[in-house]
Length: 461
Image (cartoon, rainbow, N blue to C red; front, top):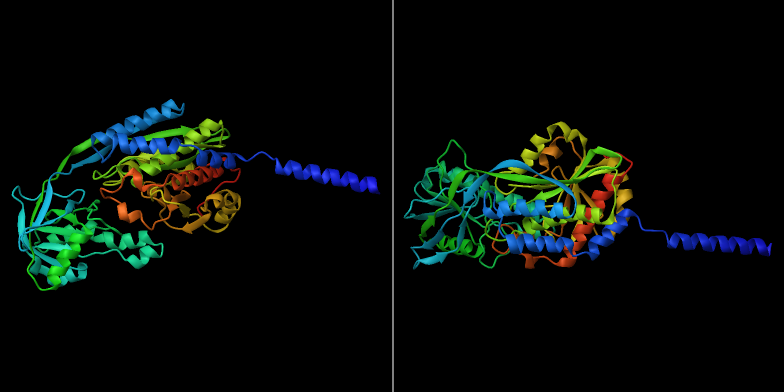
């Protein structure tokens, strides 16, 4: 009896020891490598510090395509450039002053796509509205005036972790404000920068014109200067501004999406896409928007290659061009790959900054999501990224795939300070914490690998 108990004890000890020394899974190896490696940071640093701003059609955008393509090739990863035609808008001189108040300087920036003022500028009274309903009530009273939309972000939403919801509420005036004002004869349109904080930095972004209405210049004032104009108007004072903007829209330019992939070992025709947008606005170097996403997505493939892993499905990295002012890259990819959209097992986008990861947005739900969560939770929980949030849109560039029913995911980073820097001169490398960035990269790599190597198919519902 004693010998039997002793034998069992030895066996249990051996089993326990074996379990404790079991080799890590490939997902665990990827995460560990991502957390330890400086590769993604080096990619991001070169993209931002050495190449700099990358607005579509610019020299920086072209260099980014060339450099990232060469980078993939240096890693031994198959890559190609898929051509797209992109808008080419160039920012010019931009200045304003309050001629009614001692010529005080107003700091502002043209909105992407804006037309220019006359060469000598525009001098006109400023009339403030809080929303489109108020504009409609004023109607022709805004004729000959500069319409200013006082559109602050809802900071209660921002502080409660819903920065993107607050952004969506405020940004509508950036997109449609100029044409709505032009309908009633306004000569220019201004908004308060769509931002959650400011050190007198203006925040740009794309706007659009209604082709049936006149095109008038449009710009964003800094939060501080927007509040100044608001205070003066609320006191009942006449506010008169001189505004000069000289942007140009040039003919569309040749550019490309950068497409790299590691072929699947068992199901190569099934594709797991991971990507981000390569372009940025021209005011800064686009570190959080979206150089960080580019570097993370590239690093996923580099890590897999470096570790000698072979996923069952093909993992395809797409660096989209022209998300900021046209979405030509995302739409172009969907058009070029329309015959294989149904073979996309998943699409994962990262375009929400590089603060600490909190999880992923996804259109996957029900039993499909429950099954996925059971597989990836142990990995993602290590970097606090195991939460999945329901959303019909995981990212702008993959939205054509999402709309076609492809299971889609978007990396969610802590959004509290994202709109402090978004689309502004402050979007630079120093705003990113390397440890948070490494955790983001690890989460992205783990989810991508687990979907690509799973024996189970993934469905959106």
